[in-house]
Image 1: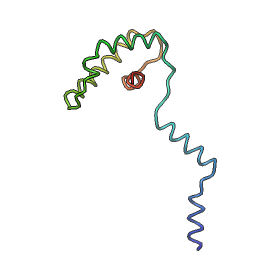
Image 2: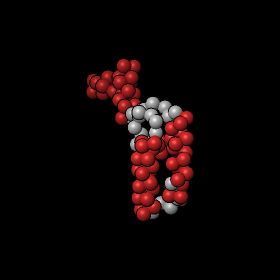
Image 3: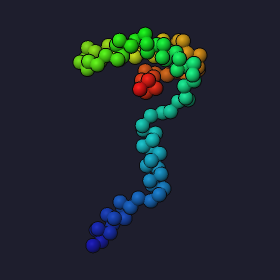
Image 4: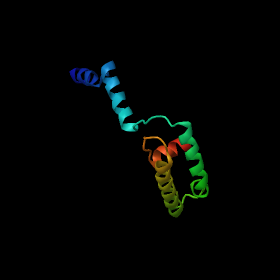
Length: 99
């Protein structure tokens, strides 16, 4: 009886514990950056059009996947050079905006 009471007490989630856990989970997901401007979206659209054949390839084999990763890396590098924003964006952030 005492054992079950202690286990229940240890597993009890208080609102404070729940808030701390949620903040920890949110921090582990991803870091937010500033929103993209319209100019940045136009640059991204132009660059994705340039790499369209590789990025939108439906194949999922290792060769195609490597080609896609390389294309996104090059796209991110070109985006960093041509973007007027001071915010540096990597390929995973650009992929997230694109989808």
